[in-house]
Image (tube, rainbow, N blue to C red; front, side, top):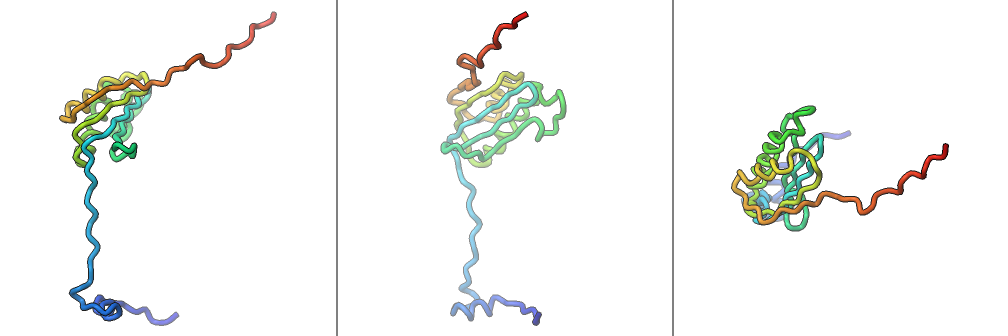
Length: 147
């Protein structure tokens, strides 16, 4: 197998022709800053999920009642939805978020409570859109029963 060999920084510098003081160290990447974004709230009878996206639609902060430790029937309560909204908004504020457009899907009990949680963190809400999917005529009805 051969001997294992340790490479020191002075050996690397001599191979590249630079002195030990001239070796470049990779800089830590800066956190991205988002000033405007969109909040998508999915509220079902069982859970409330809040995801916050940038203007391009990429999610950079999200939260749900299950993530916060609520289990079973308590996940679908308005109180849990308020905490979910606050948690997601606090995560987004670390990125510098200031203004959001809110889009709500679903008919669960946490619809308005999640918006109140987001608004309580100090983020400006510019618009609220109800994007709940609605059937435009549904499926074909069953044929009549012949007896």
